[in-house]
Image 1 (cartoon, rainbow, N blue to C red):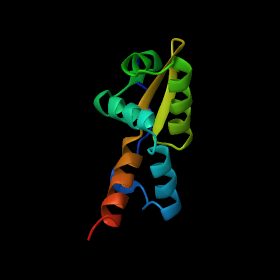
Image 2 (tube, one colour):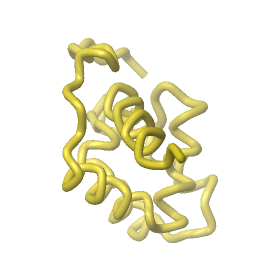
Image 3 (cartoon, rainbow, N blue to C red):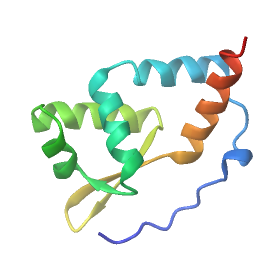
Length: 107
């Protein structure tokens, strides 16, 4: 798969997330299948849809729906390479979410 050259800001360059953004992202992560997809993409820098489907006990159409949900909220990015759909984790956004949740959960 060819590398996609898109600008990705560093985690420090992403503005603090609003409460609404954190809630929306948490809702997206609130499904076990979407959490599993995030786990897969954490270990693979880029991953084709078919490879994700093979790792989950779900139909291809169901995985595609979850990928679309994650992409629509910005947690993952997608691209097409030679007719195959590939996905990547939006690491700067995930880092901003991690910082926001860490701050929220401090006691």
